[in-house]
Image (cartoon, rainbow, N blue to C red; front, side, top):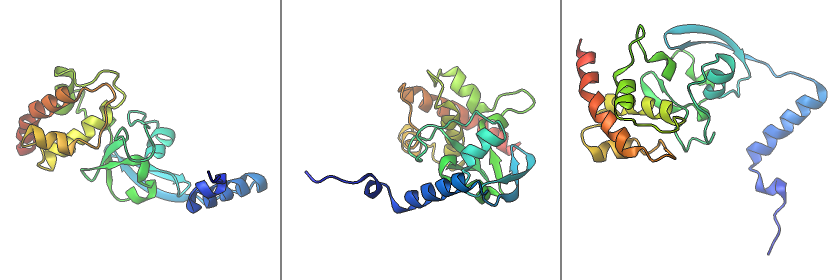
Length: 191
């Protein structure tokens, strides 16, 4: 069996960023920060962060919006789903600077004057969560699923929610919650 060196097993782009980080740590030099304005949940923020900062890390570490969860950090679980201009994105794979000039909505931005969003209420009504870790990402993705027109059948809902994983297997309850919230969301959008 051939042995593989650790350096060879790590992709070149990862080796380069690790080398840069090590060089920065050794010399004490600081990277240039990206200055930009970001609208999150209807509120503007002026920020200066490392340009490599993910939207997820910016939300959690710089803006203290911890409702968006860090799950796999590889875009595979959906726990970090947020809305960017109304479309769902996995924030762990989205650079924060790429969100400049766009509206970011997190789970914290859904309630309106203390009244839960219809999808949040439907998740409660149908007990569409157990441990609750994936719930914020599930709710954000479910809202997008309805808004994108992908909630016409249970099969559609399951298909278009398949990027959000739930280790507790609350999937049937999640589908029921989406079905309940859909007509309420449609009515609210007409008002």
